[in-house]
Image (cartoon, rainbow, N blue to C red; front, side, top):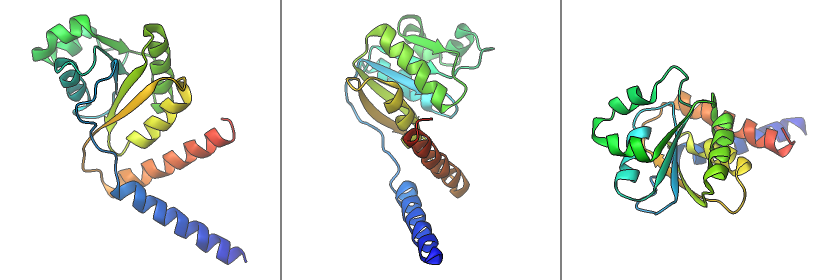
Length: 176
């Protein structure tokens, strides 16, 4: 009996991993939202958020999880074509250190600015866990649009992220 249960659990885990790895979230397209949140930690995320602002698909942007040693003017200097966006529309969040604290930092920012629709920008392999955390932190009346930055993740990254995702789902289920 234990052997069957273990085999069934392993089969479910393998099928889930296949779903997770082969059906990664996609870019959102040209949807309008009140704001954008970019989670730091990977290439092309901030660039994508700045393009969204430039094209008028959102009016405000939070970059969550910025290192405390980063000065706003230094970060803006890395994106010379977007100085106007940095002056008017971009806020840096320095409190987050992981995906869960990104969600909490974003929730405070959304509440402070009375935002009703939000575009979430992170890498495709990270989107599901980031969205899970954001769904738990934000009120139900805030509409979230997933906008994945496409990558070519290694099998190891997918394996690690899949397990983190299910651990966080389990933790949420038991109230942690």
